Length: 132
Image 1: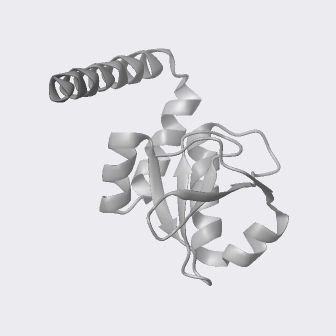
Image 2: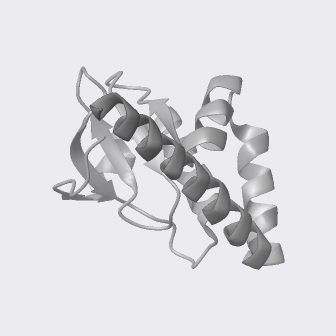
């Protein structure tokens, strides 16, 4: 009985994600589309697969080797992960100018992969409110 409920729930979540992505893409501005296109060009194959499936991707900090998950968004969307891949801390750091999500996520990726400690020095930490 619980197996059937779990399968039904999983199917519903999958359909909801498809529908959400369809409408999000339908109403996305041209600037947002270009930002996402540029982000996709900079992602590794593994990161691109993560982004396509979950609208987030993981990066490794260049100095500490810590793992971070960057979720779709423009603020409070970077999470430091523990050894099990669960959010441990949240970090908020964004460019000085208002940018679309794809551009912000690309800036965050580059910052963590090239100068992690300086990026975190200006970041505000927060407690993650979601879990996997």
